[in-house]
Image 1 (cartoon, rainbow, N blue to C red):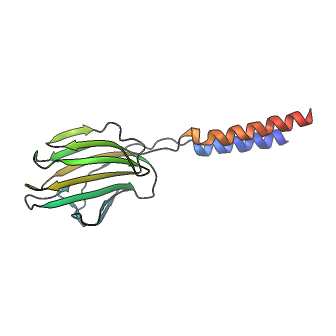
Image 2: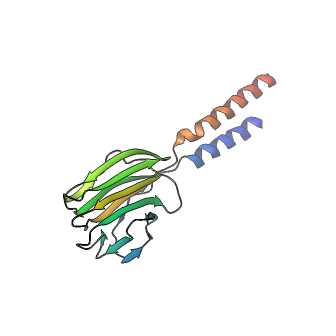
Image 3: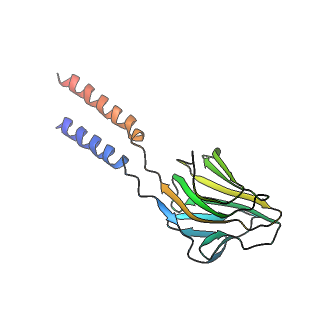
Length: 182
């Protein structure tokens, strides 16, 4: 009886802690917006204090030309919290003199970085995995008109190793109980 109960608990713990990754989601920026927090498909893009508003127009994330100087300091996070992978983006228009930097963060530590200084259609991010935030920063001094489209991300699954310590403790308890019975 004790063995069956322990096995059932271990099975439930492992089954609920292992989840499949959802399919990647692509933001197409088809809803016009100009404000502090833009949300599409579970991802928030927020303007930090002192930053230009998040601007979505004509199917792109960015600005119309040419109104410098503009500071961009935006933050990407999941609407419900949690970790995500930044997979790809189309840099529709980025002027070389005004680079735009994407920084991946985990627990307040920068773990990935990429700077766009020119148009890059279909750019795939490397190392932007398991992040709790991505920041987009730029100090637009000349043209101030970066534009991005088709941002693709994937919400990360809870890894199975998170349940491993609990499973080991449960199996250890079973071994002790079995020894006492014998």
